Length: 249
Image (cartoon, rainbow, N blue to C red; front, side, top):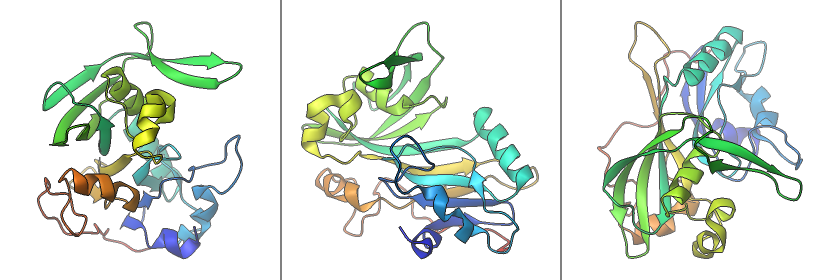
């Protein structure tokens, strides 16, 4: 990814915040694997401020979509408080294997981290783990696949991936929690943070950003009748995009 490509993916910008459309396949910051990271390109997003923006929360390497950044120290702190307090409203689009039991539902299943010397670590449902809640809404159904909106009410690591696997409907492309069956459909993770609503300014409406469906998900979504010929989700009312902030400091 180039700096200009990241700039072109800005969904919202004002004097305090940026929301970018993170591409799948790139980690947000450095980890054990090395290689390119999204935050290496943050200096290109200063736009006249003395320091680059910083992450307000995290998305997994293979998850795409809305990612919020704070542009100064106070904004970074306040974003952290919003996400830690579970005040941000997040909606993810996913394609899963199988059929969910109802058109709408809730997964209330605590999660705990499991460590292993040969496999590093992963998450699992554990009654003694941290409280973890996900709401879901079916968008479209096929014979073998289902398109769902996922709304996490808590922010645990890998929460959506584990909860869908717990229901017997792992996310397409998720070899960790869905095994070979999930990877056989498509090797790319079909999980996209499509909408983010932030109650940041006290006297203004919440900031709303929507990220377009990424190219790697369009094939399956098209087959399942969830998008139109231009790749727009059919179950959403038309909105003006991108959402633009008041200031371009």
